[in-house]
Image (cartoon, rainbow over the protein chains, first blue to last red):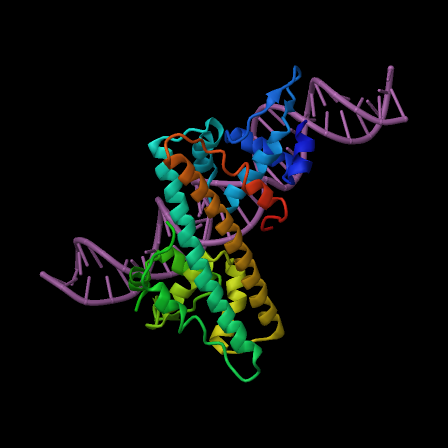
Length: 135
Length: 135
DNA sequence: CTAAAACCTGACGTTGACGTCAGAGGCAAG
DNA sequence: CTTGCCTCTGACGTCAACGTCAGGTTTTAG
């Protein structure tokens, strides 16, 4: 299929697909006239790329990890990289869960009519005091 | 305290603090000569701002929600805003958890010597097929 | 065959949260 | 007083993941 159809199927823009190619995340066959031509499997790959982007990985990191998926091999570097990213995501989940709980607390306190919302000042700061943000 | 000390205490840059003021997230008294002067409580507030940033809120959103914390009042708008942000964070957590599980799967498969890593292609794409990314 | 739609490359624009630099003033120590 | 560090405003730079536009070629529909 050509780029327009892949864009429609995977729900990303044509520009994004060309960007992915530029970043070496997605390769395409070229027709005689230079037009990109993708196999069916490209749609899944684009979904994968999107998933990894939404998990906060950079295109460079994704480019470094995708060969593991493609070649179905893993070097010690790729494994430690995977583990590092997993840990980062785990920490991110934990931080988000804390913030969500804080939001829940303030929502609960403001939904009942006669209460203020002195929330995170009491809860979150204490929890935050023992860790640092993502670099 | 002055801006340098607050920066050191809260672990953010001086530039960031001035930026927060520009975005109306953080106010400062001014000395006769124009230098910013902060109360002790500013350190906690900076932590709060950082927490909300790391949860993916924009400075504009934070600026709209902070008055609720300060004035300890909530309007219907601020309440629905809080709920919307909570839901967004919840969805983000769920998406991250899926991706983390996928990473776990591939790590497990690559750690044992004789296996490939055809992971997300089997697991994640199916899971992703029923939802959309954050806009 | 022709016009429209899709595609190409190249390049500049956008957004957010700052970094960085320039030039000028302020402030405690010796 | 002057040295040296801190602070001020203002303004341009950065980085990622694209958006958008220009100007030209290719494919498709009628």
